[in-house]
Image 1 (cartoon, one colour):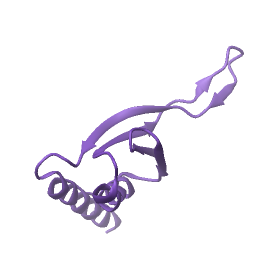
Image 2 (cartoon, one colour):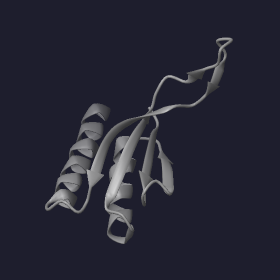
Image 3 (tube, one colour):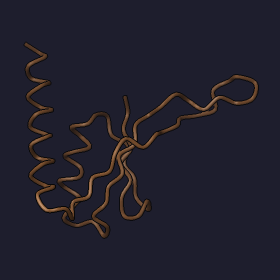
Image 4 (tube, rainbow, N blue to C red):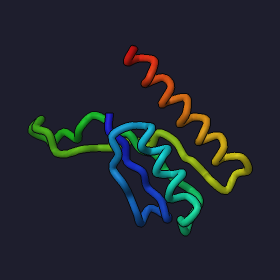
Length: 92
């Protein structure tokens, strides 16, 4: 699954390979971003043209991270640690 992170009122976006990369990006960009709201989108079924052929990628809104909320950075750090620990556990 591929992720898209939109921020600064939708004026900026990043395509990221996984949820951990999304969380790291928010932690890195958040303190400097013009807008504290980050939209997380996930890749969905591709658009189909009228003839049934694929027409391109499509993303659906997965969630919103608002770093202006009290404790949000700590919550994101905890979620990132959980994600990384789950990955490490699945490799064993």
